[in-house]
Length: 254
Image 1 (tube, rainbow, N blue to C red):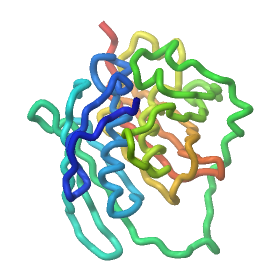
Image 2: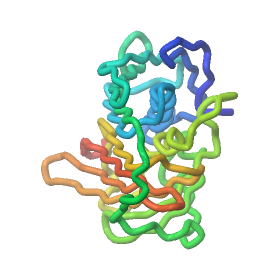
Image 3: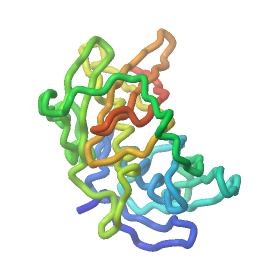
């Protein structure tokens, strides 16, 4: 079973979708984890070509239920285009995402990635992420992980579920689906007893990811005033592909 079942399609790439139990969240298993929804909007927005930046605003919680995705072009163009997707649940907008799509060209002669590569996944230990996080989404992941330093971790992740039953999904979409998981990779006693959901996610990509495994080098910064930032370098097995940032609100658990 996939994360979503498509119920209908629209010419713009959107449609109606039914979430399955595999979308259950880490903070509340009865609500959707935002990661599969990020993958869903990326899939809907990528119909006109790959995206190089995706900015996702999380406007509210989402039940494990039917959702509707509508797609619109904000700034049309032959070489640069800005598109937008809105996810609606129970009559209200719960996610709004915008993506820049840029025409490509051959720049292989000047290609450069300054970030160091991740260790091969075989060098990282298998990690049962469900031991620390409940919900169907986390249970659907295969993870290899290591703690690097306080506030920093590295991991390789792969989803065991498809995004949509019966639909081909690009490697780019698979990477963006997994990107939100970064906020749960850094563990430690100082984070126990705290609620730290992210209210947004922004991904910038310098090249298209390849393969089912997604690498993450994640650093967490918590400030003294109730706000946090999770910053991640995304990798595939050939090296770095981009960066993801997540702004978090910090509160003690009741």
